[in-house]
Length: 363
Image 1: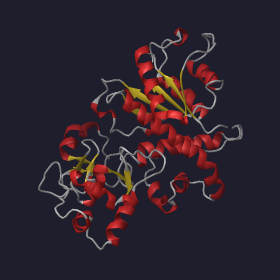
Image 2: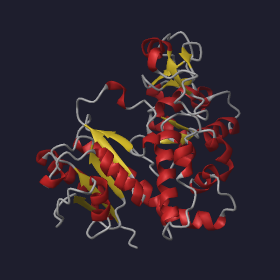
Image 3: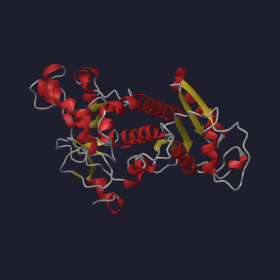
Image 4: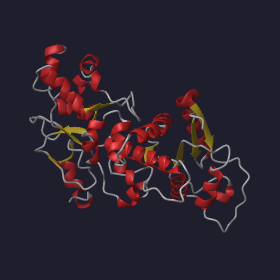
């Protein structure tokens, strides 16, 4: 099978479909192709469910071998007309049957809390049009490349691995098998989704591997990378190292921590992540108490520490998943059910906690 990426777009508004297609092609460049859903000969077959018909269509050329589906969450005006009333749920159901990962996106009127709630167990990655077509396409292509990387590397990892644990397999995929136990702490306890990974006698050869790759990709994107713990985004990294966000954004400061930058599937050069354990190794190898002390010694004597957004008199150290700001232990809350156990740097600032507590799912 070709290793070229193939993205299929489901979008029912002609203007948006045109602009998103153009942006996807721009970011994918020569790495593959982008196809709008349509242009096929298929009767309405009113007695068949949308998901059954979509599954059959995706199993035929030119859609065969799709790497990623990108779909608007509202497809009620779908073209062709015999798909009128189509929903993203039907598209996701067909994609799940074929073990094709899917990114869905909402329009500009999406609720403010759309991003920070745990969503990977729904079976698709959530993107947004809020920042424009170009950013939507950029992130969708990052997702497609990441799933393609996992798909290419997974068979080799499975041949070498004696374990069937998803955490062990994902750690090997990321090139850090020693982090398997930490990755296991990100398990969300969804028995239904874990059950989908069990091989079935009726499953065609290769489908179990594709399904596992899809599962691992969702887990990595929407849990391990989303919630700081094993890996940390720029704000969380600065907070953990006790560096102000402004100082950590300085290229000279970041260069001190270059060896800890994450470069695995879904790595994003514009919004990078760092391995937390490797940050610790860098600091300790220089006999420093924390990142601030190290940076002051090596590149920036006047670097400032990270301050809690709730109370700037406090050192931060943690990350508020709602406000996306550094926060202190004293001014934040844990124990939110949708925060994975492995995400021990992810917290909810007290102001946000007080506002959302009735429906945060606190345990």
